[in-house]
Image 1 (tube, helix red, strand yellow):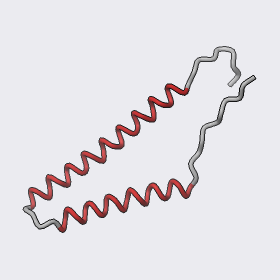
Image 2 (image 1 turned 60 degrees about the vertical axis):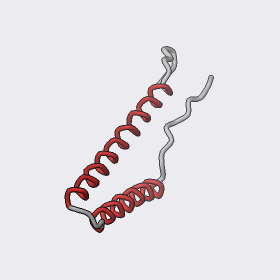
Image 3 (image 1 turned 180 degrees about the vertical axis):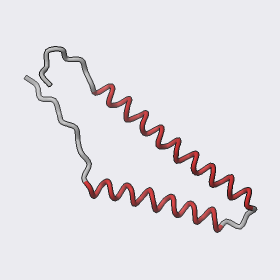
Image 4 (image 1 turned 60 degrees about the horizontal axis):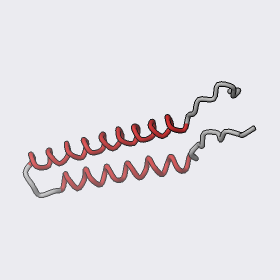
Length: 81
């Protein structure tokens, strides 16, 4: 009988590092756009572009994760859960 691997869990340190990295990157980008010597409409355009890029990245990562999870599941009618 084959054993199915359990779901791998991330550590709290890995989660904290990911959150900190994301926060620092967003803050640095926001500061860079704010300090940019350009008109307000140019800075606003860049800020909207960054927000769009971030939301698109979240959506893409969710789609990739969902597709991988769906391909990992196999139908085994006689296997106990």
